[in-house]
Image: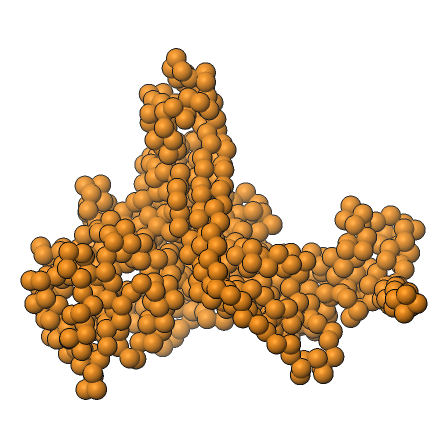
Length: 632
């Protein structure tokens, strides 16, 4: 008992010694005090919760000693460094750095400046403990299922000629459910009446197998979720202690293979936003487009015509811009109250003038921003505009970027495309056989981890497909989806000829993750691909409706060329953004409730691991009439 008491006294003394008492002087702020002691304001708030509401003269604050248990660190600004670069280095946001250094950054970032940022918590274990690691035991394999239910409640104002059936269908409800929520409409609807709408979304989470992982120095929840390919939410579910913070050396439970999430019911309807436009308030839309006109004007070696011939990125910009202009023209014809501003942004790999443009212009009344194109620059724009809560739409980047609350990725990820394909296999109760080259290990590993039901064909010693083994993997009476990932055109030709012959006995459809170059080689007849109805996931669809053909014709009339994929994206993304900011509820609420579809693209945003991603994608296939059609 005496020893226990001694230990308690020792720990108490250590805790007291790790703190400093500070008497607040007249006019002092938390930021100034934090800077003085080389800690962050959050370190002070942790020990003095009331300080969040401001500090008064002669108040005594407890300040943690720098380096004892604080998260503050001094960073000296190097040449060419930006706030965005520093934020990324320490895995914090630009707005956080601006808050921590409110006085220092009043005149902007300067070389040699010392600013304070938060640093990841680092274990203070002695080196000897790092050398002797505890044994990590493997957990027994388990299967656990959880159902998570999300309920959203909002209102709907009845407009002329609306019916109960139409409103119920719009929100994924039955008429009975709508009447139960709004008993007053039993005898009929009244124009202007405000209805209560409640939607439910359920997700079934299945965890199969568990392993363990030891946290390494400087790792964060965000970096771990990307490294282990699981969401932060799932990590917290498996490791409740993470709510108290992530520390080096912690041993975490992780799934031995990826968690599978199946949407049981989604009440997110596809709607025509033109029917619910609010024209009462002027809206502001900004486009950040990388024309880089200054560089073109100052390039004495190349003419503008030469730039147009050789600069692919400039051509991409001009195509997107042409589509966006068509969307703006359409909005004018419809009488939508939208003012559009376009800024020419510098957009090289490492530099951008985004920060300068935002600093020199008033964005306080902007309703949405589209662009820039590159992932790092659009992230920077979103961080800088977060103080205004402006939605920033990333129009073309396919990269996985920062999970920022006001950043929306308009292009579905590669993972989402493949997940859509796998869901189709299950829906059709298909037999999946993969013919994957030995050089395509990444595709093989991805398929094994995410669709373990798939069978894998093998090759003989000469590198040819083992036909006896492959034929034994096919199943009669079921659709056989044959995934092909082969880089040699000669091998593709041989395999597609074989699959065509096998169609006499089996129901076979060819599947690829993407239409790669080898498939377009002149030696491979298009009739092979159409006979096998080659299917692939895509972020966009083909033009098929009369309205879409009208758009294509109008675009060609204005530009003397048919719209390509970039032009269609420019129209769809810009028009969708305009319609959403012109809803009474605004852009953010609109994307949380409604799916939309235009000429070539669909927009079905959801928040996944903190990132706002578009799930609107398609499955397309080559048909016998030499057209491309939707499989679903």
